Structure formats: C-alpha cells, structure tokens
Image (cartoon, rainbow, N blue to C red; front, side, top):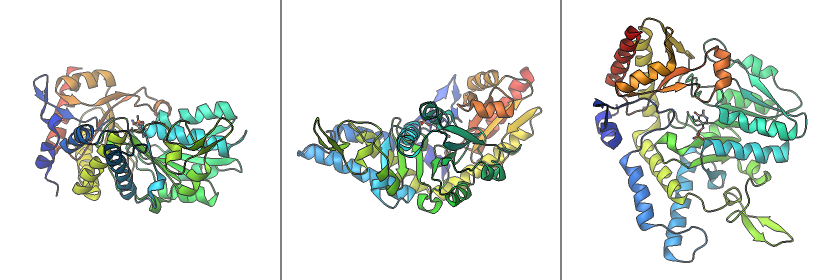
Length: 404
Ligand code: PMP
C-alpha cells in the first residue's frame, strides 16, 4: 500500500489553491509535477557540479561528467538495457523519434519502402515519418483499431510486405489509455525481420518496462512525464542498431577527429549527442527515476489501475457520459465527452473548480478522425492522485452537466 499523503508532501505544488479551490491536478499525461528531490537535484547541480562535461581536466568538469554518466547508468538500469551505450540523452520523446526517423531513413530505406504506425499515434510518431516519406518516397501503413480502442492485430499482420522497413507504435495511447500488446507486436515484426520503435512516453511513467524482455530495437520516453525536468528525454536503441545508423546532428562531442578532408565520428553513445548535453537535466531525470523506483513501479501500476477503475465507475454513472477507450488493458487515462457539451467548455468550467484536465485533440488528430469527434476531455492520473479527487471531478462534471 502506498502512503499517498506522505507522497503528496514531496510535491509542493499539490498544496496550491487555484481560484481559492484546492488544486486537483489531472493532467499528468501532458506533464507530471516534480518532487522536491528532483528540483533540489537541479539546484545542487548548478550550485555544486556545474562545468561543461567530457572536455575538462579540471575537478568540476570531471564531477559533472561523472554525474552525467552515472545518470546514464541509472536510465540503463531503469529500462534494463544491456549497456549504457544504448542510452542516448535527447530533448524528449519527440526528438528521440525524429532522430530515429532521420537516421534510420537515411541508412535503411529507399523509395517505395513502408513504415507501419498505428491509428492511435501522437503526432510526434506520425509527422517525423511523413517528413521522411516526402523526402524518400516511402509510405505509411496504419494499424486500425476496434470499437473499444484496441489495435487490430490481424489487420496489423496483413500490413507487412517485402517493403516493410520499420514498425513504430505507442506502448500506451495518450488519449485512450490503451496498453498496446507491444511484445506481441514486436514478435510479429521480428518474424518479418523488421525492427520496432516503441513510443514509451505514456508507459514508462506508469508501468514497469524491460527493453530486453520486450526485445524492442528502439524505445523512447520523455523526462518531464516521469517526474523529471523538461527538456530531457531518452532514446534506447540496441547497440548493433545504433552502431549502424548515421549521426543525427553534427557538432562537438559526437566526433572522434575532425579535419576539412575527413571527419570520424565518436563511439556510442556520444555519436548521437552533438553539442553540450543537458547534463543537469540528466542527473535530475536520474533522481526522478530513483524516486519512482523507491515507490516501486509495480506498486505505482497497481495503485493507478485502481484509480482508473474507480474513476471509470464514477464517471460512467453520469448521464450522457461517453468514455473513449475501453480496452481490456488500460493505463490511467480517461477521455470523455458528456452529452453535447463542448470539451473546451467542460475543461474551462472544471478549471474554475480547481480541476486541471486536458481538452482538445491531444495531438492525435488522426485518432479523433477515426473516432468521428473533434476532441475530448482527458483526465490522466498519477500515483499522487486520490479517490477523493476523483469524487470532486465527478461532482464537478455533474455540476457542469446540470448547467447545460
Ligand atoms: N508520444 C506520446 C504518446 C505522448 O503522449 C507525447 C506527449 N503528449 C509525446 C509522444 C511527445 O512527448 P514530448 O512532447 O515530451 O516530446
């Protein structure tokens, strides 16, 4: 059992009031709040270990370098990667996917080739492939879903052809909360010798992830969604794949030698980290990972699952409630509409009650088109949320419903 009251004390922002109401923060899918230890780690870094890394002979530079590389090992252990060379620090999920889209398509695709994505992808797992499609003449194949928001695996199997080069899918949908069967998706891709990228933006903060067990070639996530700072994220890639892909950006850190005649690239992981990395962000992200590990990812998953079950039950009882995404395997995301009330109106009025939810298309317009709607209201949960907060949410929705 988690001691939620004690956990909430670690997050000063949760004690805030907005419009004289206690803040109820249910927009964790967009970003999570930060525990004190993460903010203190940033302060500690700038006050005590700030110097550019990898280049300095001096004490501070070595301390900063060690802290950054230690953070890489923490991420490695968190994902159960085989080697810390397989952990690349990026700015976030979006940059990680763009990196792979660019480097993979430079090396491994030619005109007429195909990349498989799913209908429930975030724009950041669609647009980078479309940019490459326009450059390289490749096309996207889309895995459809059923009416409860589960990917159609039989349809997925039928999308493979001689020209399939990569599969890129979300582990958890940021709109529907569906936990996709990525292990099975990866197995099927591997039967066709096709590598897989998994967008873990909404999974890593909420369910235990073991990249070796999943056997994904690439797995990506954002620091800010797992209680870490903004501006830092991770690309995990199997070493043999990262080795064979060309660099994404050029600059300092990523080179071995440079001359005007010929430049050679650095070894992994530095080949993919051009320029001064966010070495303060990496150590703060590592602190966030230690924080959630101390609580326990299994415990977090179980608690958030119970919150989701409770919220689904409570909200389902509201007249006119439509919940989008009723997959058998779901993570803590509830997207809904009530009667004819516009999602934006619902979000604005809930905000006045101190309840922070997301409204709109959630950067998943193709999914909205598949659902035949413009947007939803989305409540997304964290382990610091409580059933009492869900009661206030349900009462708030009921109040708004009656106003219309
Ligand atoms: N993929 C999914 C599934 C997401 O939910 C998000 C963030 N909403 C992203 C990618 C993009 O993450 P970021 O903006 O941190 O790069």
